[in-house]
Length: 566
Image 1 (cartoon, one colour):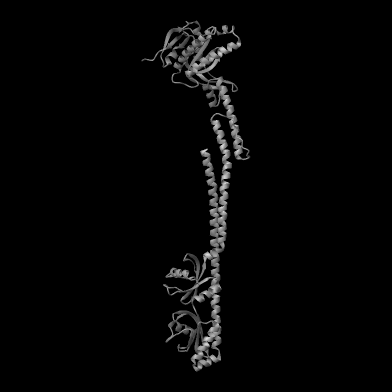
Image 2 (image 1 turned 180 degrees about the vertical axis):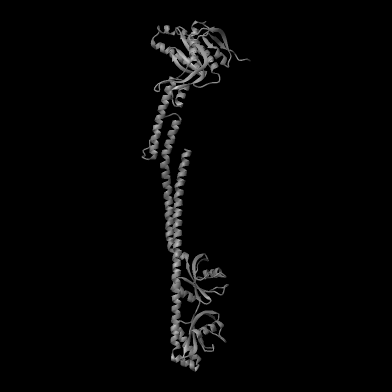
């Protein structure tokens, strides 16, 4: 039961483990796929954002350029410049700048001095970056760039005022600040940060990022601004951003950002759905695993119970499994095996009644073959004296009953001394010592068995006399020597026995007892006496003629067993 329960537990754990692994793999696959897809979408969005950013900047620059060109060609504006009326010039610059969204308007003379300005206050000489921009405009006809004026970065455009030769320069532009970043973010649908490429300690000039993420970006980029057009990933205050750097001006870069968590937000519902489905599937798997385990282990328990019945020797139990599968086939094979074991047990039981248990075991434990082997054995023959004549006065039933009683007692005495009853010969017995299994003292065991048989016969005779019957007399002959032991007969019917001259001599010795004294009922050969490891009281009968032997045989009469020394 413990083993089956252990198997059931392992089966449940295996099924649950397999389902859990599959669900984890599915969940991780979905999650990794969604994350990879989100990153791919972010990269696409960044590419689109870069193009949109450039178009917005170009469009805004073109709009400023067109508006400034119109202003520079206005006759009234040129006349105001010629008169040097600064308030009028500043008013025109302010009005025109407000119409086009410019946040800085300057009028510079050919000597690079400020004539008029709005929204900015440049006192004294122009800063060198602005002078460089003017020199580039003088050589190229116009110029644009990002320059810091009065501590604030601007995207500026320089256009000449022609009459028809240049008489002044109009500079207009817009501030590069968080408002611009927010405006660009609306167009690109990305977060936008403007970076000062020359300032490694405080690179972030403007950004549409929240304050916490903006501060984190400054810390991340301090001294480590990514290369232009490179895709980078940053952890900004617990939120992963995928970013790309694009050129903006001489000393400025623009970084476009996309939040990975916001991009993954639509997939969170799918992730939660997969989690709930996985959890529900796991619960169903628990019930399914227990159901499958019970379905498998219940037949196994039934088979185990039947096997325990077989172990106890009960071959009548049948396993009833109404399943048309491998377990059903196993149950059928088990039932057939039990019927075979029952049949073998009946054969063994019957064979044990026909021959000795030792011979039956020898026959059942190996493939039965005709033939034999030479063995040193001790053979005992016994026979009742005058039984045939006395049986004529008894009924057949009484004779069978008397013989069965006699054989039962004699067989018990033989088997008690490791002997094997080979066969019953009418009222005689042939017994083997040393075949099919040898013992330490086969000759001594045979002599002791003969003494025990005579003692049993004395007990039987007292009962017979008390019952009004004639007592029985028995003669026993014992010889030891080499004989052929094995299966004799045919493949269809055989008998395990021993044959040879030593067997014949034992039978002849039993015949000698018919003409010996009453106390000489057990006769043994010299070989048997020599091979016995026990000491017995014997009477030397000397050499005697034995039928079938050309030379006399020395024989001894056994009178009893010597007591062991004190």
